[in-house]
Length: 289
Image (cartoon, rainbow, N blue to C red; front, side, top):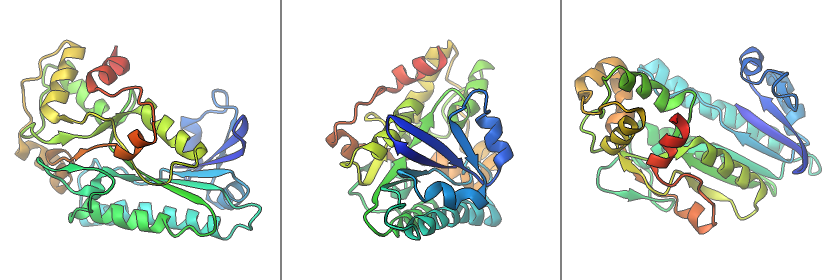
């Protein structure tokens, strides 16, 4: 999904740029979102050129069983769309070029570790997801002219619908919840409200540029996440999902949850970003209560 913002901040219109108008219309029905315009790929140029800012969130989900074909599509879905958006921004005339480009990337950039602490100054990892993120970011940075670029390296987003919690909650409700793998791996998370607000701030605030980690200030071990989730749901969290079971379902894609990284939002804190949810306990209560 790419979001294009047009007009002044107090009187703006939002264009959702998508390759599937029907899916986008299901998510943003006109009766509930009258201010949102859905733009199919042939309409991207008109939406982007003349916009105040562009937010790029496009990419195939990674929480699936990886094959060589899926891995190729995971990378290409990010590079292809980002490249097209950058091309449309660069081909705009000076008076129609967006002033800011906020492009999503991921904490997978850093690779995984149980002991290291990563912030925006940390080098890239050497695994597949790190490679994807490096190419994704380098593509976004091809924007020329005076457009400000903010790269948001997003952690695991916790929200009511979809994402990691949607997969975990049913297991806990059936008394089958617990840590995935050892439980010692770090889980760098962020509440949906906070990542939305961070992206919005990056659109409006000229101080937000370069790499910014989109993670909460207090990452947790996966075992702690599961314990807190069990407490909020009133369910036990003692039944671990062994490595081999997860690998049987997700194959190489299991590395996303079996390995982790402790990522800190150093830049966001320096910029004074007001996190609404700094602790996972409070985030889970807000989402699930």
